[in-house]
Each structure stands twice: as structure tokens, then as C-alpha cells.
Amino acid sequence: MFGTQDLWLFVVSGLLLNIAPGPDSLLIMARSASQGFKAGAAAVFGICTGTCVHILAAAIGLSAVLATSAEAFLLIKLLGAGYLLYIGVQMLRSRPASTNMAETSINNATKEPFGKIFRQGLLTNVLNPKVALFFLAFLPQFVAPDAPSKAEAFLFLGAIFNFNGMLWCLFLAWSSAVASQKVQASARVKLWLNRMIGGLFITLGVKLALSRAEI
Image (cartoon, rainbow, N blue to C red; front, top):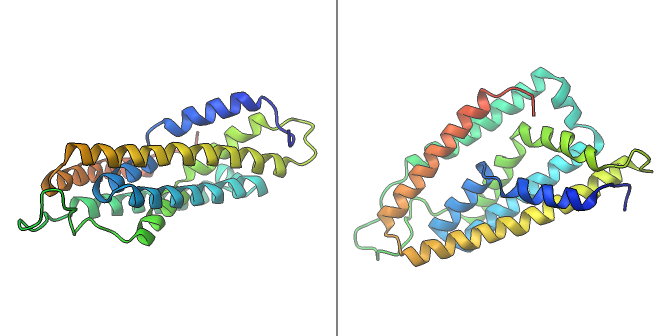
């Protein structure tokens, strides 16, 4: 179909890869736990938009530049690492909510507009060169050698991967929001949860900065 092969294996592999934790999952969980499902969904749609950018780049060959140019990879890597560090520091600098607020209130310092959360998800994904290289290495394995249009096959596979990833991420956002409500965490508990995830973002940022171009 559309010049692909082993489509069922691609779907299963894609689902497993989407479930694997990473910066995207952490951002979704953090926003869902602190601001509810809608905030988590905003992060999901930003991440999925970023994935579309990578899919298009792979389809037209731009990702190959990252795979062959050490300078291009280094530039995007440092931008991505810097952005992850920025998000992590912002979370670590969160302040506790007023003591007059109800225990279930969301910390005003950590409440972000949905538009900003969307952009966070977008940039967290787009500025990760590992994602670009992943698509360049992963998708071709499921493109048939005799495919009439390699770009069309790339786009088709990418759309499937992104759609399945969106479903999983929305479930992650919903489950994180529900879990936060059931625990009925106080503003202070949510604050420290935010800071813990911020520390993880800093760790991931450092790891990305030190990474090499290999998949």
C-alpha cells in the first residue's frame, strides 16, 4: 500500500517506540498533572506538529543533511539541548502557591497558557535531531524497493506513526490528569513533582548535548 512493505510490523514497532519514555512524554505528564488534560493535550498537539516537520524533512531529504553534516547536527543538537535545559530550569524555579488557595488548586507559577504549552511541545520535538535521524533510519526499512514514489511512502508511514503516537500521547495526558486528581495532590506536592520533572529535563538536555550523531 502506497509503496510500503511489512506495514503491520511498522505499526507494532511504531506503537512500542511511541510508548518509550522521553522528553515528549515528560512534558505531557508534567502539564497534565499540573494543569489538567487540556494542557496535556496542548502539549500533545505541539509534539505531533513537530513530528510532522520531521516527517516532511525526511520525505524531501533534509534529514540527510543532519546525518552527513557534523556542523548541522551540532547546531540543532545544541539548540535542542539548550531548550530542554531552559524548560527544566523554569520548572525548578517554580514557586509554591499561596497558602490561602485550596489544596487542589494549581500553582499559579506553573500555570501556562495553552498556546505556550503547544509551542513547548513543538520546539521540544523539532529541536531534537535524534528524532530527525530516527525517521531517516526507521522509515526507509518499510518502504518497498520498487515503490513508485519514495516521498509518498515516507509521508504515508509518517502519518500512521504520528496518528498512533497522538492516540498514545492523549491517553498519557488523560491518565496523568486523572491520576493527579485521584491523588488530590496539594499545590506543594504538585510543585515538587514539577521540579522533579524539571530535573529530568535538565538531565535529558545534558545527555542530548553530549550525544553523537549515531542513532
